Length: 225
Image (tube, rainbow, N blue to C red):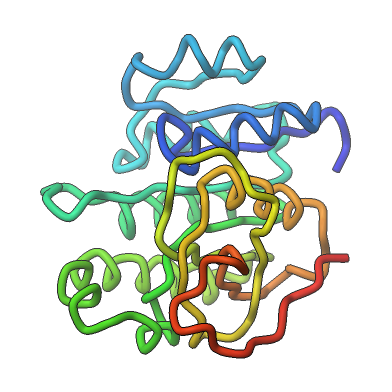
């Protein structure tokens, strides 16, 4: 990517999105973040990220943020709701981002989803599936919309997320049966590596810590070039 184009972040106010913001700026990439509230703005600005206020559920806000004179190379979305949220952005928010990305000629769209979406549904225990079912349905719709959009995409599905420091043992795999835990900071590192890797184009990948697998199945690690 050229130094004049931006990485656009949606969901950077917390969790994996916040860790991705740190990783992107550590690579000295220019970044812009869509924020709904002021709470995370000061921290993101301190990282050197340009902050745009708006709601991903509002088409006008999304288009104002993305359809500008400053070209956006890649959109990275970690938008997601919590089980007790009433307005979850998992599908409608990501749909708005995907539609705007198409209009803006964005080169790549990286969607951070979840193990349990799509063909990885069988990796989860019945208990986990029951607890997350409504969210996973929305994440699956977002994945399918992105795949059908014609954009160059990478979908990364992390396992159970932890907030501890990175272990460096985060890996990607195309095997949808794999499940385990992974630290948010390790997901962020994998996302930034995928950003710079054409081998991840149009791939759906699960992200786990190879030392925190559930059930220890044999799997083939996806090699990032």
